[in-house]
Length: 402
Image (cartoon, rainbow, N blue to C red; front, side, top):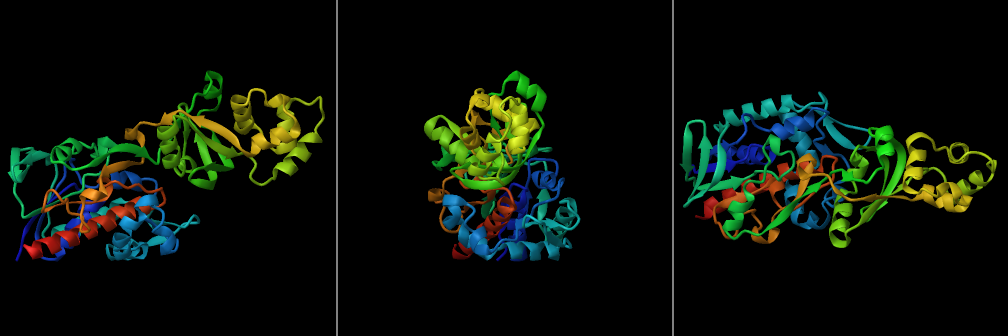
């Protein structure tokens, strides 16, 4: 029998759940607080929507750290290949970039989102923009709408409200106190895939803010990765920093201090650097020693002078070790509103295997509002889509059991 289902949140997880449930014949309404749907999805697509990743599935499924095992059933039911096939079904062909990341051929999200919303409407989904959920009302859900407050009492509901990053696009975490009032355990939301503050000197900040550090290798508890990042007026930013953000953030919480180790010359060994440096004229300036002996100049050379003031007095072997593992001490993550995504959220222990809240039968949750995090590279979006699908299947099973 047709059931009334409310999906609260019009991002990727919510829209995917709406697709599954409407295809099963249920009457689905999606409530979105913002004037349009998928706003963060669209923003991500402005620079080329990284929809998923092409690496082998066993590696892909392990990219979610300690949450990998819990997410795996959802990912197995909607793999990266499944994401690409789904996008193709909406008229969006994809290609694999040099990094293994998967992008739409048109390099933007808007055509995919428009086709998706048309499909949902064709399947009978009601899309209610400017309908902001403002808490529970007995057995129902209270919304503020342009026509005034309403209370909705569906047969089942699914929350897909996102985390706390980019709140101006809708993910403002207003839901946290309402669920906690119901006894739901929620891990504090923290920035993920974010930059970090560094105590730069004013001179260094003014001269080098915005400068990229290219062809470097970085190491933290997360491992070692190669690429580039940017010196910002606040500290450090960029994809190579984001790869370490969870490890740096967690070490700051645990120990009160953390540092990102940077190899400024990944193509040379310490031994070769030491040999090349010792050959330099003893009367040469420190800048010339670095440039001729290690190939370092500009922001790379300045970074050594900024962080190791006495480096110019070091012996060649000691200086070589600094070049190969220069520690950048980080003070704190940048604010969560600036982060690409957030960690924390509804505890897995308070969800059953079907993504239903154990204390609130008939209410399900999916997407970034759950307590997991993912690196950049298409992992976050794929898992949001996959958990939206799995939660929708959970809604179907629960309704069938009633």
